[in-house]
Amino acid sequence: MIGAVLVVFLQLAGAPDAPAEPPAAATETATPARVIEEGMMECRYDRSTRIRHCTNSAGEQLRCRRERQLGSRFYTWVCLTHAEDQQIQSDTQQQIDRQQRISTPGGG
Image 1: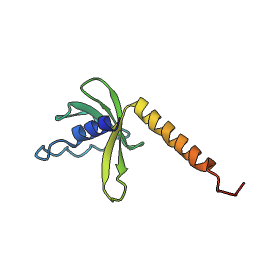
Image 2 (image 1 turned 180 degrees about the vertical axis):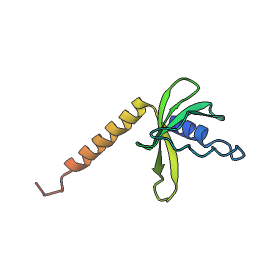
Image 3 (image 1 turned 90 degrees about the vertical axis):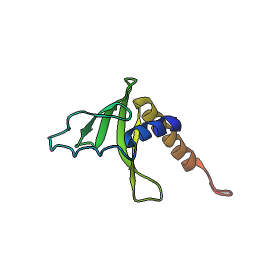
Image 4 (image 1 turned 120 degrees about the horizontal axis):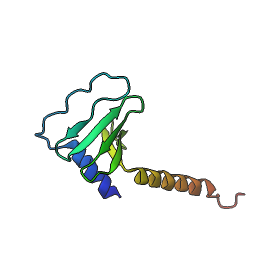
């Protein structure tokens, strides 16, 4: 799963010599769809939720959002399918529940 996220991120990042993406037009909720040439992904940015909705060349629907890297002040784009996003949320909730159930030795 991490590999899939990395591949999508690299597709969005593009090659270093690729031309920069044009600035987004000021619209009410979304900008027009653009095709990112490296990965042939069509993306539409929703300003209200700050999420980029993309469709890759295989036809998968992806939700891309900017997340801050741990230990850095820089952001990266993270793109996940709906199933991957739900799985990460479920795993995170299970880990939180497990941590909250840990009892201290000799405690109640």
